Image (cartoon, rainbow, N blue to C red; front, side, top):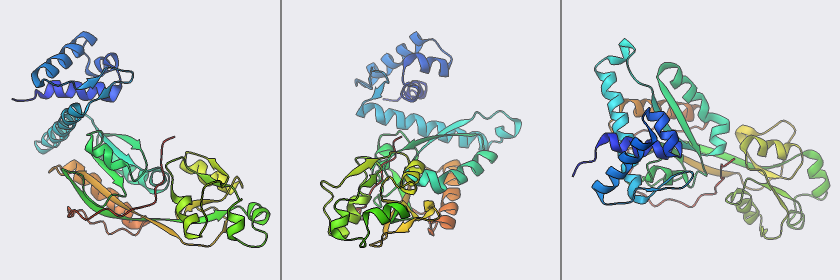
Length: 314
């Protein structure tokens, strides 16, 4: 049995756009034709590929088909470049979906993408999630590559180290004077409010645990956006774990351990010149900003270490 690439591309368009109507506009065919293609593909495979909701959601079986569609599109783009069609201005733009955590997005990740877009006909489709969860987007076929804290490669992917994001517990001077008049003691930390990214962010909890303080019952604010998070700490809303790359002048360090989150680049294990070019540019920026090695060779499958996380929705 073979999967018709046109039918697979139609399923991917539905998933990307969220509805059959939106997919029809993207593919420039009627909604009825989109529905017929989807029905034909499901009948051929004998599987339900799509949950018909708003937005439409792909099933586990559908994930494999979407991943195939994205791989075919990527290889086709490379092939067109290989035969020189781009020189005649005939190459279609290609969408490259990538997953990245919020703090990387806010501090270093956009610069290499801007350089890449200046020299290539690429539309980047960025998905933000916690660095502990971006690998799942690779498994589902939602993205082609991801910044992740997972050292173990996802099946069908290669992995290489990028570098380390470092976080320190910081506070605004007035906040520190109010809540820590006698120093950053265990008792003071039990009552001083802190800023959480969201309910999946564990950085503050890891630091409190290292300071022998349980986080249960400690007041907290939720600010689910990376730049706004650093701003909230700077305004004195609470103390928080701020990336060294986002530390603002005048913030007071609270001491304790510096938390280090190791980041990795995982991408589909395809011989794609375009994907490798993206990986190389990202690795170069990580080497400059994060002190990464820039290694792009596939790694073995070590057991992934437990890492503190910061979610990135919003």
